[in-house]
Length: 309
Image 1 (cartoon, helix red, strand yellow):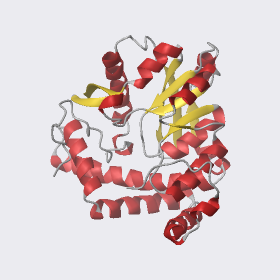
Image 2: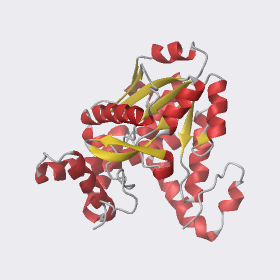
Image 3: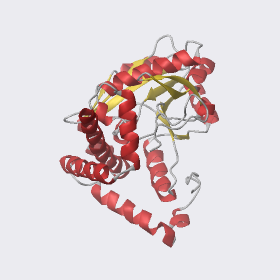
Image 4: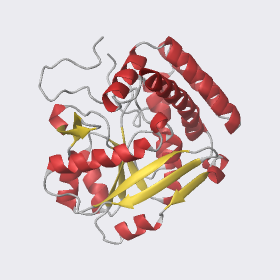
């Protein structure tokens, strides 16, 4: 398995060897596709999602397991329709990612509406920085790019295994955001908060037993990141809930400040966050990242994974 390492300190010449040619070819195709009109990208995204659902085995299984856990009252047919809609939404998200990487934000600016912009100003006026928390929806790249139009935000990101993808992704984000922070670099997060900046966490993925507490997510105990509660307790930074998504005609972004958070109880705080994420998901179920292993870490160490076939 390839080691995930940053490419920010490396020249492009490090990645021009024959073993990277296929990846660069894919990047070239992605660059060309980013010039397609929005309606064309949505059509191709839907097509890509349909093909992926038909051919996928692992991701489709993960998606169906998650939906069965979270929506046990849905019929099998309803969950299948939701799974197919999810794959289409993720297919559209691939093209939105291409646009966020290779096109100027002005290309999609008129399609984005940001609600409650005053929330960020009020939070930063307290002088302690703020922590923006949100979930993973399929338009995360494009909406995140536009959030930077309004907020000097420092996103927390996860490295990919493909070094060419990292080289492109990290430089794109460096061009959009004044600072980006690899998710293991807690010191950089604290430094940004001390400078009264906003940091952005996508908090709904399984970070493993060491970095989590267990709290209910759609009624099932789920490993939930505990770092946000500790950061807020130690830095006194304001916590803002970030919602965003794709609409029929464009995209929306919204911020809400959380009151009485942190509570001093990490499990209670994780439960609060999960309930808020559930509310966001319920408004746009197909856009959520159902094909990620949200329930990978089990409450009982060594218990079998629900994704095991």
